[in-house]
Image 1 (cartoon, rainbow, N blue to C red):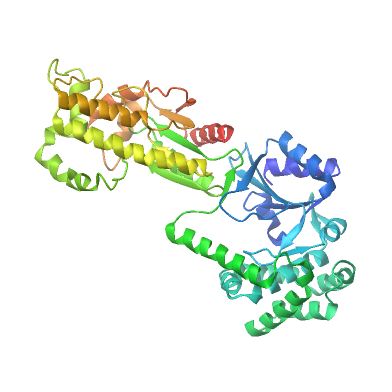
Image 2: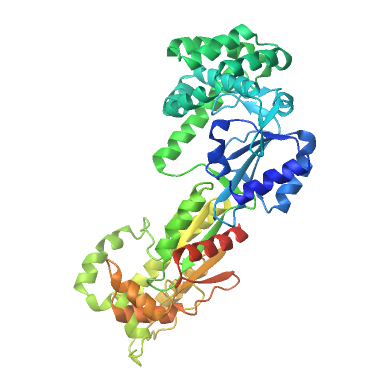
Length: 486
């Protein structure tokens, strides 16, 4: 059991909070290790004390952005300090269930679940009969639409394991005693039919027939009429398919909103490795997008020149950005010579592409997305991924206009919410660079290291992290820093 989960459960027990982990208890060991959400049903009269405990344990609320929310439910997240895992408490104050997408039934069974409990270790869970009733109703209602049947096919191995664990004769006997007290619109004969249809399992057509009969009996508990419920289910299904096709995610967002988190530092300080770790960590729970501000994609305006870049680099190798930067900012910088015109045009084009990418990222963060940016423009001209022309000699009107245009474009870029500045000694970065599949010239690595040692981000919190340590220690520090910001 994760320490954070154990502490929470112990507090709930000690303070007499009426709760239970109300569903999918066949995977409770995995849940207690943080593998899935902690689905807690909380008595409504204990809701305020429950939230107070969460606050004391440093849980933070989250919301389902961009989706149809389910009433009487809340999401709370905490960082488990010992493992770096995100603990997700999905709190319920009413049982609103049914189809996976529409959740069309509000069943008045909270008291049944909370007053008929047993202990699994230290966790309160419903009596097997009470859990069986909810499971059978949920599963059978899902057999009444083509969309839900499609989703059930994907879950069939998992469903068979839960059926084998829960659908026992003893649980059925207990359920038959509870049913007339809490759901009098159903009868034990129909419950028996549904039970056997799932346990056997019966042919799909038979399960569909029983599902329709149960849905008819539950109509007084429906939140919407049949047509509206179908429309909601279809809309949600289209959203799921759309997100799968586009590779995006439809998940939670911190209640305080999303954010743009920039990872900066010289070459070979571990930015890509740390970004991989953060994307996997946050992406399990939140809507996350990763971008590369150092190599922004082409826009509709810059697409053609972007395509021509490889050819121009081959024709004018001395005007490659890496060579011009070291020549004009290094120790052998020409005293009077102005910057090449092609370099100036490329710098403006980069500024335009970065502005497009980062302003879009800023807008996405306002909608709840956590944006992880590999590199970010700093406040200092001449720094990596920042304005490159303002501090160079510009001895004609065209070059001065290019420098002014570049400066305006960078001024338009919104600041990030947090900067993680990864650092490492020069000898470490040189050794790492030499060990990579694609190495940079040593002179360039030395030059970028010197420029990246003192990056400036006006008005933005910057957290410096030494990456010259075991990866586990670096990852933990970065996680704690990000969590404190969200």
